Length: 385
Image (cartoon, rainbow, N blue to C red):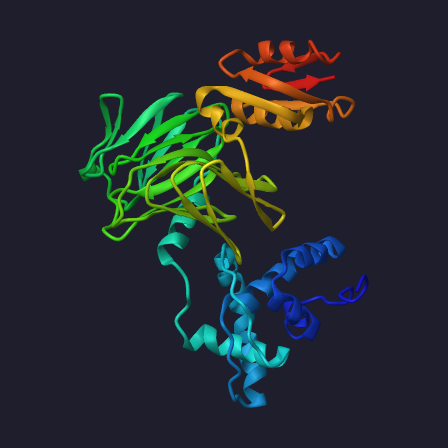
């Protein structure tokens, strides 16, 4: 198969290929990952084809051949519009042949209602429209925007207003938008107390979007980054957390989510209670001291010590044999700096704790006690040699 797809140059080529349709139907993440590694230059095209093939349940219709070409031109225009719906949309494909699948996709897109969550898609759209920039924590609600300092607490009132400390930053009547976006730059942190009694500790480089007022059916938010959640129990309104890699459903519990869109590995770590995690076609229920991990599309559940995953909210970094390049990446995000680590020391491993309340220079000095490294700082860039 190493050269099988070499001459495939369009999404149509993949959708009409029996072997590719079979791969999509099996939805084996290891097999798909291997395919991407063999054809990295065609990864985006294959992803789009898989999204189309897996997006809908397929039934073979009786459609004249003359209709196929006409409708294929239309579906190509739909591909871009449907691409953003690929997050967490994994369905099994049932089809008699690749040609029938192509025909069925066309008619299901235009004649059948889409199986999607409009609220979730809207939340993702709001999150993606907000850019993480240097500076202060931003609170965005439609045309309203305000900045707050580091480690401040944002409190949502029952009416939907926003308090920071005792100061009312946004009155409910002034918030015309249905949702609030909180953007936390690198080197900053904040806490959000929601009107239902839930609390969210938001780590550096993170965006969250939540409703001004929760609906009567559920409590639904989206996160790009890392957050520790203490969810208030409400059996009538489940709490739903969506990320680009997975979704989490809870009633009342404490857990940590690490789901930076820029990271290959994401996780959900459960401290108390119970949660159900869905990542593509994978689904798992966690017990306390278990974690759900995804890396390059592969999911697993492990028994773990939760403290190393949650101690960041207490300004501690627990090291259990992580390599220096991983540590520097975390420090870069936490302190809002660009730390360039020499490959000479990149694989050095460390155990112990880092006090994140200390200046970055003190942290690097302590690390250098066990590794003969030095560093220089030029503005917001640190070079470790």
